[in-house]
Image (cartoon, rainbow, N blue to C red; front, side, top):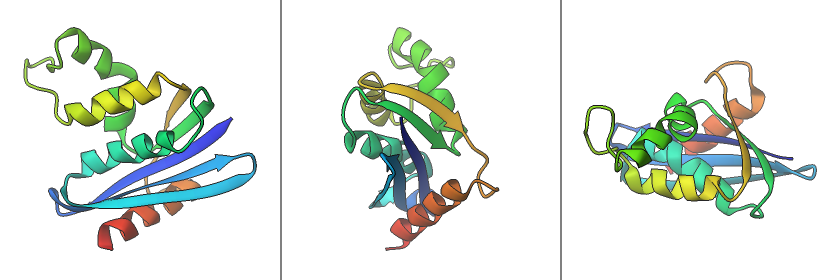
Length: 140
């Protein structure tokens, strides 16, 4: 089982952003991160699991930990209706960040993923670590 902790950060929203992931696999800890010049916090929150899943073997069993209810609810609940409704929200508006959601959905279907929400800035050591990585990426 591979465990992945993800986070996104934005200085201003929109503004300069960063994303990060900590991947725990076979006793090894890998940190990945990146930044964008003009982005939003939600885009960075989505990019973190996308990039993490691109860094592991397809078909793996994965547990993803995120402090973003937007990401967790979006990929486990909302996305089913968005796809049924032609990528429209319940209010008939276009889904924000559709390209990222589409990419995450495709990747999500290539793995056996369990999505978990963790409280931000709390007692979860790895969530706090990935938060710092994402903030540092946004500041770089």
